[in-house]
Length: 601
Image (cartoon, rainbow, N blue to C red; front, side, top):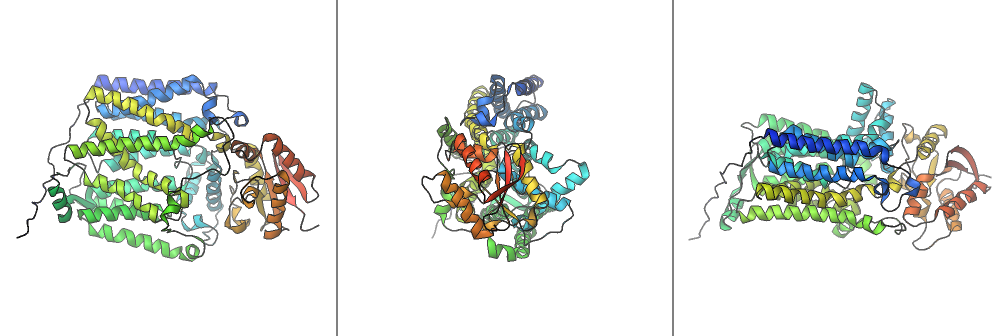
């Protein structure tokens, strides 16, 4: 006879509930309001000058009150979250305080949106605002237009222009992420401490900056809503027989927490609608979502098979509409894992003070979040009450490493997709401690996570800050040069493709911001090499329709990474302006647009 392990009975122990406390609510709200007050008081004390920023970026120009606001708000949010006696509205005030410090600061101080790569999303939004139909042959964004169509609709509805929306996108999405994480983790645990603790850790450890004006920001929200609905009524929390037997042999009793719907219709409809919107919004996130869903389906009994069958069909149907473009230009799947685990590197070599610290801060934040999550997982295993769904969701994201075409960004995608569930593990571990000790450990943990997160988020703002002159020059090029024209740049740190006319100007070699530095072979180079590299690019692509755009944002990126000094950049600009192969056609402050004449004279 073969011994068969008995079926595992789910852990029926109710999750602890904390009674509200008016006193604790008052203290939490007070700490949050004090953090907001310190933040507001600190704003006039900033001396924003990107030209003098070191490797500390904006942090080197922040007043002491701002750091006090950061530490107080971060420690207060996680500490009061895991204590669980403060009302949700008071915790929301603390969440707003941390959001203001991390994302609201730059929205208030900077006249234009951060990040050069945000501007190409503005162009697609303005393209739809102008009434142009979808052109799937134009670029990848036209094949996933959901985010841009929504942005255009919001502008028509509110009259808020896309540039303003992009400027405030980061604080907006940070708040929205909080609601979505709270909802998603609610499918894992009913305990407010775990749900709010996960929200706090997610916010404090979110250094990647995926909340800027981009499709992925919306995609992350939709993914969280999808899994919150799936865990409530699409997939049961009852393990399949194979998993129950394995847990039984290990003498583990799976936790049966989370909000679970009596029926499947409502959560199923929410899941399908969220996924349908997701498929039109982003390329990789639906694939990652299906991988995570597949792991849940393998591990747990399914309550609503119609959802499990329908959502992959939606993805296949949408991919079919974009297949002509994808098959010719895009590699969605890349099974060379080593390509996807390489750490993203800068184009040059650190030249400014503190750059080494700045470069390691992201890894430190990620490492601390991972350690906190491991501590929470170990706490579950020691109590012999693991949550298999949480293990499945956190671990399934690793499969993305072997199945994405984003190259070195693969590791960042894994972190983004697993962060909500890692945060839930971490919150669980902190709630297992005694209330007073747990609050102290939580406060210290918050500071340990948030400190390097600030470096990772803001220390590169010498290049992330976009000059108004650069924005004006790029927009002038797109609205004043003939269709079929194209531009090249010294490096890719430019706010290009930000108008609805972007489709009339082609991108050489499929590169949205073709750079002279990218044309040169590795190793030392001279200013003459840069001039020759530009000439080579123009002659190879189309000498009659080429333009060169130079500006302060490119200078700051180059000096930050040691490509050249400020004096060398000034000499290079003079070389181009004085060359008979170029004619200045537009100047806005320190930004200049030059028409290439070398191939037509």
